[in-house]
Length: 558
Image (cartoon, rainbow, N blue to C red; front, top):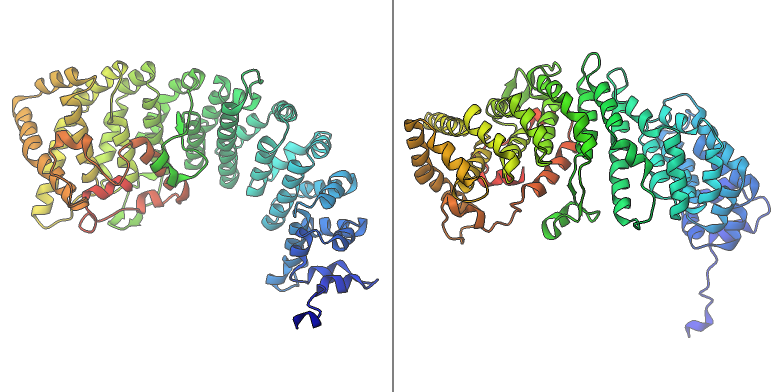
């Protein structure tokens, strides 16, 4: 008999709208106002799209709320206003995109002196970003008429919301011809050059960091979109500028000009590393790396390498004399002279440069003895796994004949074999005396295995064989004993500890060993890069593991 009852309910918002004197604030107090808006409640949308209501909504997201309000209530209405304006309802999009007076109110928000309120900046960026995607032609036309628009955005680049706005302009404009028009406009406004100028010792660190991140995102977005373009499509002008020799040279000039600060070195190097990316995981996320591998590959433009090569000596000097840092307390004691983020990024850069297989770059790094210095740091900072991984990348898989010079350099000038043996024996002595196993031993095991594998097979097999024969007789004997006994037993123990059901392996069989973790160092590089991006400046020195708690093979995932 339920039909005897009227189960139809009228929302409280409809009841409020029955009143002639209802206000916008009253409606915004209702918990279901956003739900009703997105459900396209016609009466509500007609009310919201009135000139007075739209004006009030825009004012709410661009005006600092009164300071005498309770903190949790100050941004309640601005937040709701932003959600209503970006609810992706056609009538609201049409009203906001077509009414130039409303766009002027929004634009006026940028004309304030920095710093912007970060919450209001995010509301502003989200609203403009939604309009760029939904009312593209109207909004782009409006912004292009504003001569100082890019300058105002960059003036507030310390707010991360401004980064998002710039990236929306680059990635969310459709169709392709209009997008190309926007890219040419941004290029004419010298966006790349102006962002590059912000990466400078004299600039605020937050501005440098955001400028660097914006340039990195532009490079990746542009390359991704270039891969999807049809053959007859025009090249991306922003990417062309970023990859030009003049642009890279300008960035390097800023990094090394005057007093060298860690912020400018690190932020500038991040841009260089992005330019040097030859492979990058797909947009599906980090977890898919291990099941699907890399989805995108790029060729490094020779102009980038040509600009970097003259400055290799400057990077070498940074490894020798880094920006000053105070002593810090780490998990293994006080570190009087921390490695620092600048030197870690130098190691990342050297690894990336070697992976380009550029003969002149490789030869210059050998001439400067850069690898010798990196190995010094590898053994000095025995608990810095981030550094250890980068050094491992530098000596891993010398697969091409152009690396013959590097192979010779590693075995002769750097005395790689002798260093491995000395470090291993020193660690054994420390442990025999009751000390803690050194934190770089897992990576040292992998490097030793790499030498053995390349000695047994591969394109540099003959060269390494000859180099081993050139070792002093006592050293050669120590190496052979180490490989046959110590390294073999270490690999056997690691295999048993990781997966007890696997067969025992010798060092020469390691390349065939199954593992639940990826063996491809490039995949691990992606994860390492992700970790480095998330950490604070001191974290690179404070981080460390005690090997009594973790087995050697765990170093694969640090």
